[in-house]
Length: 306
Image 1 (cartoon, rainbow, N blue to C red):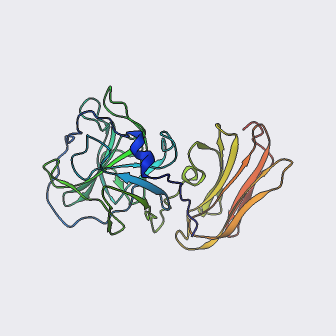
Image 2: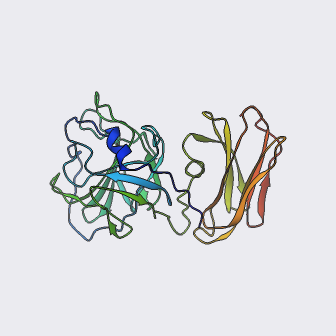
Image 3: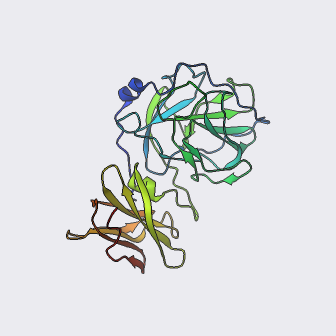
């Protein structure tokens, strides 16, 4: 199983960030929770294989078992990283909370029986109220939105709630059947989807700063191969993402060739994707492509300016 695991520098770094302002605590948004039932089976709210540091004690705004998540070696390293649903459910809030509280861009998912999860400070939201989401589905990206004047570093503020009565309704987070090791712990995501859902995207495979500039479908809905570029460092990246046989090892490949240089290839029997294959190519033509099973794509030399 190929997994991209991010470098996590440790709790000492997070404590130095001050990820949440000492502004007033974040109150309950207006949205009713009713009923109590067995807790849903939750996974870490990040794509499969990523490692994140969760912290419950680094904010004066925290009332109970809330968690702030970060990874990377700088304050802005997480900005724009994908956030996924910790469990299946229905979106009951997807809005910027404005001056109401410190949540900023907030997504709330109702998992049934009075159990809900909250995803706050998002840079952007990719789901709407009333939408049904599956576990591992992308719902937004890590950000630092909040109320006016509340300056915070990028991070995901995550909560699990049962019923009503904030803050007494906040519950300890349980990921992959294991209770989070409060007050802080590094956790690797097992939010790996299932069925026809691949939890990985080309951006999460290639990493922060990479944007898709081209793609090609492989076979009859077998998946796609993607070409990405990072303006900050001039690197291209290729990733091939499976859409069939997800979670089962099968032949997948990705390659990248900068004109005048040796081709780089990643191939094998992988469960989710091939790649990332990266190379520095500012203002150089590249040839790229990949395969899933017998379906393959091979580009000409192109994208000579990016």
